[in-house]
Amino acid sequence: MNRNTAERWGRISIALHWTIAVLILLVQIPAGLTMTRVEPGPVQNFFYDVHKMTGLTVFALAVIRLAWRQANPVPELPADLPRWQAVTARTTHALLYLLIFAMPISGFLYTAMGGFPVPLFYLVDLADFVPENKPVAEVFKSVHLTLKWVLLAVVVLHVAGALQHHLVRRDGILRRMLSSKARLPDAGRQAG
Image 1 (spheres, rainbow, N blue to C red):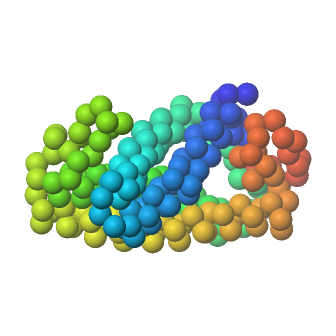
Image 2: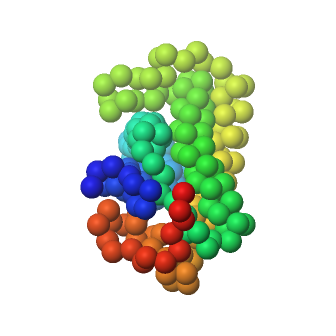
């Protein structure tokens, strides 16, 4: 099943979710940490390029994911979920969307306005389309570096919530993001 239903996520939503998660956790974070810890030169430049191009990819996938979400139903939360948990889940998801847009945008503006290249898969330098403005670049640098900690906190909350649903409530919330076909528990579904 490619499309979402009121009960579960479809294959496309699942693929976008996990692709973005893997790119952030297994490429962006390691590249970001490495690029600031190695000596200037070809290795550092490589990791900066990987970080920038992956950031652009995450941004593009986030646009696709948001458009897909708008065109498909969002699976409902269990009817017996306490209100505070439902509000926390919705707030966490909204913050994740905001952050997967704000991080690449702030990183791009910090880099491009700072006078550094932003290669789009070595085909074009996107920095050529943005005027250099080092004082404004410093503002975006601060935003980008601050948002990384906000993203970390929100991801930890998101993962903790998913694990609580899976290990404590056993309500199928995590399972429906792992597979569009996995059997889900019948109890606790919301009527609409």
